[in-house]
Amino acid sequence: MVYVIKVGGNVIDNPALLEQFLTDLAGVPGKKILIHGGGKIATRIGDKLGIESKYVNGRRITDAETIDVVTMVYGGLVNKQIVAKLQARGCNAIGLTGADANIIPASKRPVKEIDYGFVGDIATADVQTAPVKLLLDAGLTPVFSPLTHDGKGQILNTNADTIAASLAIALSAHYPVRLIYCFEKKGVLQDASNDDSVINLITRSSYQRLLEEGVLTEGILPKLENAFAAIESGVKEVLIGHANDMQRNTTEDVAGTLIR
Amino acid sequence: MVYVIKVGGNVIDNPALLEQFLTDLAGVPGKKILIHGGGKIATRIGDKLGIESKYVNGRRITDAETIDVVTMVYGGLVNKQIVAKLQARGCNAIGLTGADANIIPASKRPVKEIDYGFVGDIATADVQTAPVKLLLDAGLTPVFSPLTHDGKGQILNTNADTIAASLAIALSAHYPVRLIYCFEKKGVLQDASNDDSVINLITRSSYQRLLEEGVLTEGILPKLENAFAAIESGVKEVLIGHANDMQRNTTEDVAGTLIR
Image (cartoon, rainbow over all chains, first blue to last red; front, side, top):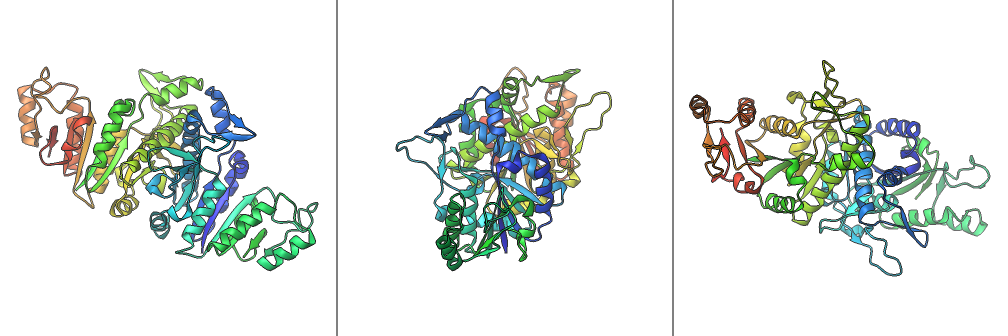
């Protein structure tokens, strides 16, 4: 099994959470890949550099100055600090962007109503699994920052969830893959007001039942739809759970919600 | 032959020179590694972030704020832009620091008269060649930024010339290696006032003769001493030449000075 693990900015931004998370990750045996989000540090550094965060209709725009900041901060500072911390824990990490070894080619999002700027959309069929397989089979742990490239020399900003799903789908041609999304809840809840009411297993048929029963909150629906989409594209299992439970969520005795 | 090529900040800082250099590099057939210096951009971004460059006795100090800036700028912005530009030229580059895959472990320089801060000294015997060999043999071109790590979670700043020499020496156990230093002259000059008086070949015996004749300027002596030190440690050949001549300097018909 290969574990493709996405961790978000909330963990990256919290030093104590991050240290524990990396200790847990180093303790996961076997093949694993980490994809990290950015966190607020890029905004903080952008602010200090006098680069304003730009939004159109509430959507963030990645202009030329901003792509340089996220390349620095996500691809350099955040990524390499995670690598150094994993190395200190005996985990042989290697920090990458989607430009490295051409692993994740992307297309600059076409301008329609909104020009998102230097944002990359991935065609999963373009993901290059050979270099990832080479690294995994050599015992290395690839750590991806949320960056891709257009093959014409331009780095692009790409959502970390999307990178995780694309890598998981592409690698499913070679390995059974569990795609793990770490978020701020323990998993999908039976009762939204009770954090301990985690549903540990959801299948296509139990999902239909949960939908009919009206158990699921609106926030969780897109995550579940994405999970089933990944499974339909070949991913063996998707897990949604808390970053603190990540290690347990790589076992059969999950704390979060396993979707398969 | 593996070409281990170091290019300095003067090329990194000059967009036209850099574009041409990367086109030339992509045109070099076979196994090659690039090590890039930092350039002035880290100072410029550090200035904008309000981080003062600190010097003691004329030596630059890498304090905690500065190591974060160089990790961002060298390990992120400069490194990943080079990778994306090489990919656009059909060269399958992969951007790394010495922390990645634990390739270049280092020790924080001990504090004596001067505390250099987060500067890493390399013991060449510690360089991990297995991951570099894995990448080279898979047809990838590793691109190193001038960063190492202490194995305890800390990124360290290390001179790019030193990284190039350490990689060249370590890889000499597996391949014949030509270590190429790109600098601002065409090579070692017979006549310091004539840029076209390049000496194309220097051996240990001709070096002695040049020393006795007083032909060599003081600036070139440390470079030649380092070159012979690398050769004594197993590197097949060292080449000193201009960045513009890099491609020709990977052939037998060199434009610069070949030392062997």
